Figure 1 (cartoon, one colour):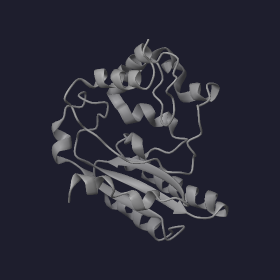
Figure 2 (figure 1 turned 180 degrees about the vertical axis):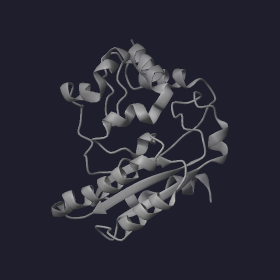
Figure 3 (figure 1 turned 135 degrees about the horizontal axis):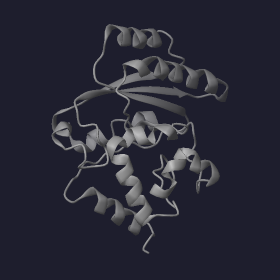
Figure 4 (figure 1 turned 135 degrees about the vertical axis):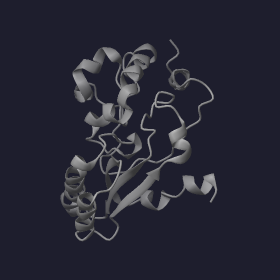
Length: 212
C-alpha cells in the first residue's frame, strides 16, 4: 500500500454533492463503557453514509519528540472520528446532533487532545487542545510573521498578543472567505522534520505573501 494510495484513502468521503460534519477525539484506550457508547451510536446511524472511524497512531509517530513539530500527541493512541454525511438540507440538524451527542458521551473517556484536520467549524475553542504545550510557542511565531492575523482561515492560531482573548477574536475579525461549516476539509498530513518547524512556518507564511 503506497504512500500515494494512502493519501487518497479518504477521497470517497470528500466527493462533491454531499453534506459533511465531523467530530473527533483522541483515545488512549477503549473501556467497556466507551465501546458500549460507540455500539449504541452505530445502532442509530442517521444515514447509510455515516460512520465511526478508528485509526491507531503509533510506530514512527511515537518516535518524534512532542516539541519537534506543532502536533504534540506522540504517545500511542487511537483517533476516533465521527463522520456524518448526508444529502438533504432537511437532515442537517439530525445528522449533526448525532455526531455531537456521541462526541459529548465519549469526552469523559478521551485524552483531551485532537488532531486539527479533524475539527469542524465551530470547534475553534479546541485549537489550543490540538497543539497542547506547543500552542503558546505557535502564537509567538504567529506574532512575529503575521501580527495582523491575515492568514486566519480554517482552525486559526492567533498572534500571541491576541491569545488572552481566546478564539473569540475571529468573531470580530471576519475570515476572508467562508470555508463552509458542513463541508469536510481535505485531509493530508506531512511529518517531515528536516529543519526546525518554527522556520518552516515562517517560510510558508512569507511565501504566501507576508514578506515584511
